[in-house]
Image 1 (cartoon, rainbow, N blue to C red):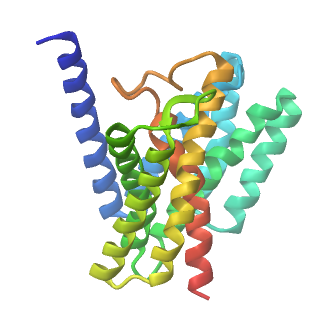
Image 2: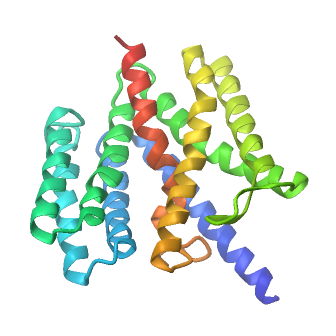
Length: 259
């Protein structure tokens, strides 16, 4: 097998494992889902610390700090995804800011804590929690996939060549269209609130902005990937950058609709 073929096989193998893990966690809900997303959050914080130029001590400190609000989110064991966890995320920010005096490192408390809180909150919704969480997560995957294929097939002007040279406007618009089409199909099949589908174009834009933001951070840090934990994929942040920006807004929308 050629080197490119071997790399593709590795990438596909890891992708199938990640998809299987995501679906298993999503289906199990409760503590199972919380464990998976909390472990992802701790790993994300470690990668964020490296992008922020923190030392090994600073990285460990940041991971310990984010572990406190993540632990508080545990459904059934602790307070769950609510105002206490939100307050502890704010506390983690101030703790890291005071101890390390690093603003970028401290901001990781929000960058990691808010999307994890949002995902646990979505999954714990008493009505259609599984489907609502699937909508938030899968629209990001649909957006990424549609953007990739549209960009490859159409090409054209670059979206942000100074940040991510391979992204095009065709891919950007194709990603938004793909995510929106997916959302309308999901709403039609499972009778979710149609407002979720109408909001999906905005979330598709946020997903790609999240991708661009992480690309900017990596460019500033002088690295290709946020980490090397996932062969062929880079780090955990590389896989979840779009979800970081989508999940909090999706959770707020769901809470607003549930009023």
